[in-house]
Image 1 (cartoon, rainbow, N blue to C red):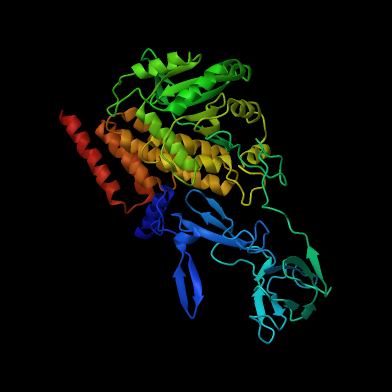
Image 2: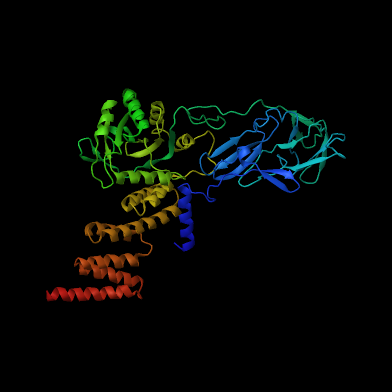
Length: 541
């Protein structure tokens, strides 16, 4: 990787951790005082939030006659709505809003220029003052404001007519527009049609799950946690833990094909205490839904991997009379679980508890839950996510009703993402995810690339194990050679390891294979010389 791409990779890692491109400075708002002067009213306007802002859209959201603002941020909250309520009655009657509908031109009239011609005689009107706006497709950075054109009017301004210059050059006059109204201007009609005004802002209804496009929903706000249903089953990495007797255990497939709820918690977390209590009280319902529960405390080991004081953990378990299995998870496993979060989500967040995974019988995560959850939601997910097809799963994974704008990642691509995240710290786990990605990718082109990556990962592990675990290294060298794009280097490394353990005949074969592919390979010739020298030493001994 060259310096340029390395720099970009480093910057994107920082962005994922919440760092800002701009330093998280506060938003600014300036008031035009006229004569080229602007006053900073950021604080007075209430717009000076410390957001990492990306986009802003302007519209009369509550249709009260003044303009409101939608903000889109990269940091949380991702969306803000600022309703203009400085003077509740200020907008009433002091505006006119029009929406174009093209018939020969494009439907939304994009590119049209609209002139509102005011009548003579008002205090601020001289010779028929004109207000001019145009319809745009995209305005401001990453933004599209409403296609309603909003014209602010003075206290005594009256509208004489509206002139529309349609795309293509046709000019059309519209009369009958009065202040304080919203009007639809249809191309070729010459008549402004009054549009009904909604009373109050549009509200999205709350529901536990979406009913498809056209049925807007919001996540259930009765829980302070996040319920995240995954678009594809994600295999969890190796998780090591100790049971209450101190015996080492690992997270194996569940007997009988049951689903499992893996709960990470801490005795110092009051939300965790409430979560364990809820699970204990709902034990019968959870078992009826085929759910086995395993609660793993993060309190069991100190920074050195030694068993810490666990008395508080036992006290919490006893206090709620916890009826399911429980134990202690080590720091290495927590690190691997954190890698899962980092790979799955654009924003890297610290691992916090309670953190719960809904797992199928093979150990694949179907959903994850951050913070306290309603048990009814977990049971609902257990009964649906393990049985639905891919299309339905993709629909359920949406936090709001709608459809995917881009093609969602397939299971193979997700597994590849996981492999990249585990690449250096946990190479064996990265290998596992790469193998899964090769089996799941949908195109031959993707498979070719992943197979080569798989070969490189085997080669990396072979070099890692060649000193202390030569048999394991041999198996990785052999696997690396099966689909190697450039086997010369692998032949050379493999042969030198065999020399180290006295397997000279095998080493010679590999050096000759390397030279057959690259006759100018100096290290290959040096390798054959090494073989002859070691043979001579063996004969002397």
